[in-house]
Length: 389
Image (cartoon, rainbow, N blue to C red; front, side, top):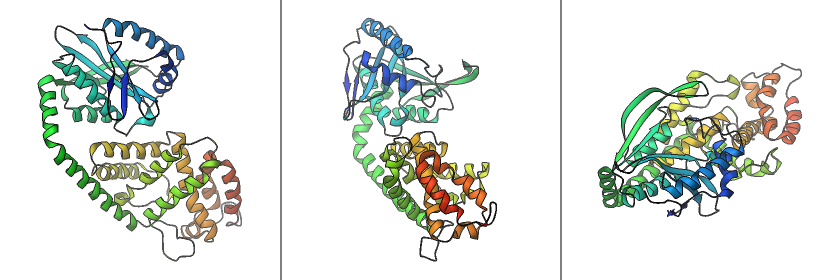
């Protein structure tokens, strides 16, 4: 088997290249993240030495041709986003297994698909592979979609194959043959124009669907108006508020990422409708919103569908500091309106002061100075704790 220590591949946005000693810190940041490692067959890394050890093993294995692991570097800023690999190479059978991992912040941009296309082209052409295999957790929907988009077919199921930190998990086995890959590559060239036209149509259909968000009425009235605001107005206003208050966040946030979260977070209300936050969560409500997200984002091409869904899920789970900040902004806007509308939605819906304070305390998690100011404004609208607010 040839040596892989000098292999580099390039795409429009990415450089796939051997890992370096200087990659230890970004590798540890990526693979110590429980979100990234959720469906892996190993637990999240807990020590920097694990990254250092992987780099040392890679130097030997890459030189010997035992496996091919390439770091995924974003060209525009040189940031390491993850890696992709061919391992368990069987030279006589011309077969290998594919693996990959991507930083959570890079999800939803199509980076992994772009990287895997380049890696598979190298495998089926330069390395003359006849077959590439993948083993994934059946719960990993994003990985399943990625493999199937590349042409992989599900070939088997192995129950209780892995036990990770005491948790027993299954395996779905996928395979891709050289002839199927080459057929796919040929057909992509012939259908590129038709695919582009179809994707443009889907994007336009989606943006017209967004008009329905203007029909979803919230419980708060715009300041100085007698009508109720709609969710589209709210989405615009919270985005502007996020930009204005980002300098006052307790922790630094990526404002661009916050805006992405806020732009998509209310879209499922097109189907599920708006629910006043003081009513509290329910399984039925969560299921309705998830079904709505699946239908509406599913109108988009696959990469954009994944982009929207990843950001909606990040917001719902509050799984990043940007999501915590976005949620605080989403809570803050109706509070500000109520303080200028004589507590309109609180009074109409008979929400007591203690409930208003409890629900909106999340503002303080991300914007403590703002919450200190706003809390005093809230308390003006109730004569006593627990009274109508």
